[in-house]
Length: 108
Image 1 (spheres, helix red, strand yellow):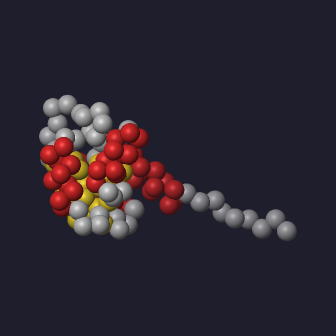
Image 2: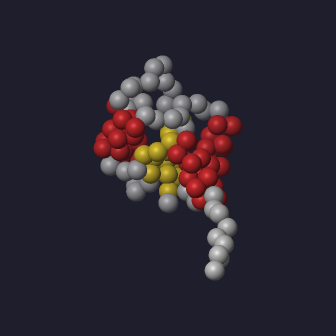
Image 3: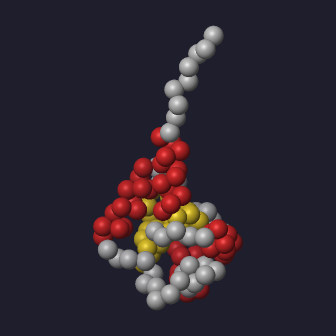
């Protein structure tokens, strides 16, 4: 699986951290888009222009936001970008899910 990352900071530490989470989920980072925000758009988190920029860069990738998105923002972005949209929190939950497992015991 491949992804485009959407960051609100150009701090290399935050970019590398999100890339590491992607690697842990077997997601290859294809591109990084940085959106400097003065205020968050409640419907889509980012503005229309940045959504269009991301849409033009898409080639089957999913889109992963560095910040937590609301369910409404995920739905609206998914509808507009026509691809899977998720965030940092979901990646962390995916890692826990992949690594969580109980040892099956045979009780016979």
